[in-house]
Amino acid sequence: MRTPLPAQVSPPPAAPATGGGAAAPDKRRGAAEKAGAGRRDPYFDNAKYLAIVLVAAAHAWEPFWDDSRAATALYLFVYTFHMPAFIMISGYFSRGFTFTPHRVKRLVTGVAVPYVVFQTAYALFRRWAHDEPDYPVDLFDPWFVMWFLLALCCWRLLTPVWERLRWPVTTSVVIAVLVSVSPDIGHELELQRVLRFMPFFVIGLMLRPEHFALVRRRSARLLAVPVVLGALAFAYWAAPRMNHQWLFLRDAAQDLGVGAPTGVAMSLAMLVCSLVLSACFLAWVPGRRLWCTALGAGTLYGFLLHGFLVKGSRWWGWYDPEWVHTPAGMVAVTLIAAAVVTVLCTPPVRRALRFVVEPRMDWLFPRQPGRHRRSPEAAASGGTR
Image 1 (tube, helix red, strand yellow):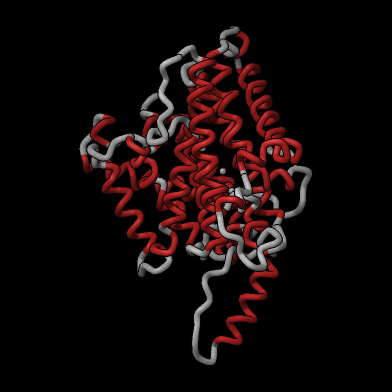
Image 2 (cartoon, rainbow, N blue to C red; image 1 turned 30 degrees about the horizontal axis):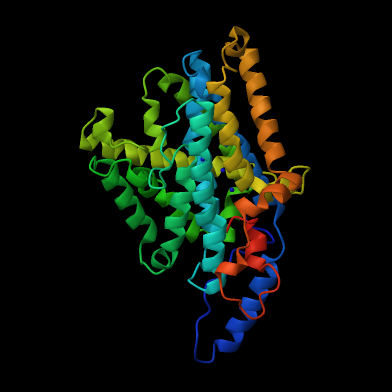
């Protein structure tokens, strides 16, 4: 199981350098960055909201794979970039992550604890809704959307390492490509996905406001139009020819019936396509405040909760009526998915479920002096840091 950009908001500042005559300028710059981080940029909230709508819609489209070539092509197209874009924005707002008490607490309460809670909840839900009373509660085998929280926890823990490497993006791409042709790295802890989606997170770490400003230029937006049309045409051509499992980055090349050279080529091609289409998506995200802007702060809720309806709708036979598998039916399903995930991102849902999605858990951590209010970094990230 998309995320943020640049005008007024700065990402969490990196740890300031110490010593020398630069101490005073660094302090002033850090204070300015911190002040800027407290103001939310509508662009990023809009990007997060639109990305989560695409995630929910794509999940709702899976039963239409065999209905039409056009439906399959649309599914392939959206799946190429919706998670990469979401992950890059998550990486962008993970910049400067260090093992300070506050940020460790945010990682535990905002990522690790929700993973344990919802991995358990999904397992119990599957036992009840799918009539599988023996389905195990296994924290080492993330199911459905839960792989993302596990991956996010791992990626964030490695952030200090990536930010100190000379060639972080190249290194992460090499690792991802090698993993893609390593069948011994299987589905345990979803390591294939964790390591193969990792380049998008690392790219997000390396992005700066000027990079987002570049894709938001009018020339970039105009260029995105033929690129997207070409991608849709290619997806239509590839729909009956391509194994859609390539999009999930869950299986090694050998498991998909091809050799290592083809696997390397496909991995690199998918990476490039995902980056290009993510840039096209980000180019057309509105930068002004809209009716949906505030919902960008609740995308984690929509992401974690929509899976119950996605899976339940299939187990309960909601796709069984013939009219559902018509063009009008697919449009209806898409609108319903968008409406449901929108509701799940609203403030009332967030208030009701904050105790499990973003628990405070002050009892687990020693009290830090001066931490009476939410930090600007956490506010800027929309509660998903």
